[in-house]
Amino acid sequence: MRIQYTEGSLAQAVIRRFNALRPLSEEATATFEQAILEGLLRAGPGEDLAAEGDRVDGVRLVLSGWLFRHKTLEDGRRQIVNFVLPGEACDAYVYLLSTMDHSITTATPVVYAEIKKARFEKLLTSERTLAEAFMCETLVNDAIQREWATNLGRRVALERVAHLFCEIYERLRPVGLVDGNSCSFPVTQMDLADATGLSVVHLNRTIQELRASGLISLRERTLTINDLDALKNVAFYSPSYLQLYRRD
Image (cartoon, rainbow, N blue to C red; front, side, top):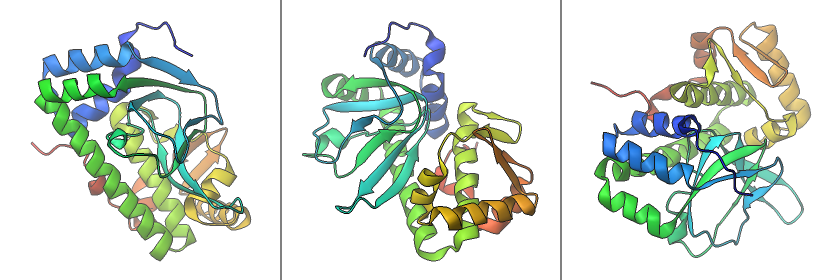
């Protein structure tokens, strides 16, 4: 369903994130924002924006709400391989492939923008800084997947969950979606278990351990990190792979 919104504020999460990845020219910012606002759509929770095997003919950018990428085995077991957060692209360049190799599903109500292939490629050709920002977005997504693979393969449960909490907080911070040491965390324990490769029981026990240590609180769909440095130490976490803080 297409939304009749014209407020430029809707695009700010995307503009902030892409400016953090690669400073955009004024012309690129204006052109990009116009393309976003002209392609606004929405979806309710639990909807597939793309399913494995689908062909995608454009780029989707998340303005608000959370989604997750996942693979599901024939017997129903699911692995969430990443969350897609406000300001991020769902599927940059995936239109170059024949079909999707995974599914993208909404965890919450979502507002997103869809830019069709022809317009997207014209944007990249005419605006160099925007083309560089989208390439950085793709490279950062690759880096995130390497961290998630390391999480599942080498970190123990406490480290996995602490690492994910740190990462979500650091990804939301540059787009203005943290409030002090708190941020939205609107996912279920089942989703979180599927993202960390833990059973729900093991996940719950791990969260309770982080709470008991005074590092975090998690209630009413809000994550509060009481001591970010200490949580990073538990997780062996460094945000450098996110490439979201420019060095002058």
